[in-house]
Length: 217
Image (cartoon, rainbow, N blue to C red; front, side, top):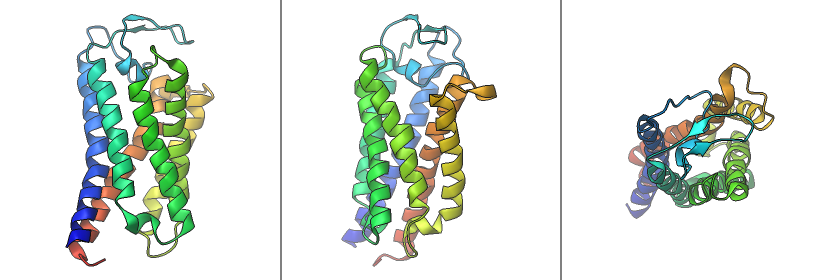
């Protein structure tokens, strides 16, 4: 029973983290008094603490009244992802590949914490490190999880995982190479980040169903 409760708590953390972060994005976007573009504005723009014109190569005016909400939500998302992975031994105890995938995915979670604590206009270097952990390290963990052995929950999601990994990694390459195409700077970033976050929600739902169906597992 304790193991079942632990897995249900971990699954809830993997679901709540991404969902509350997506909701915070929407609320922060709606609070802007100037136009906010999903294609041309970064997610990081929502967390900037000062109102100013950006000079990072894509000129735009940034002024996010609810930056504290977005940054707090990012930290919470990262913490919940790390906790959810750490409390899900069913994911990482059966093979070194699965364990390494979990470490990399948790590294992506730590990127959310770092990005939330260091907004882009406060400490750009640390913020970029956070973004690399999220979209680089975390998405690598997503791809690696597809190669976990049989019997691992990752294996049950292999088709979804492969599709998500391809989308996330291609979008990450487009974003960091500045080859945005029709997606724009903000669009490529969102595909790189939220594809993996959606996958976490699917993983959490799968773990919930498994715990309720097979309590002794």
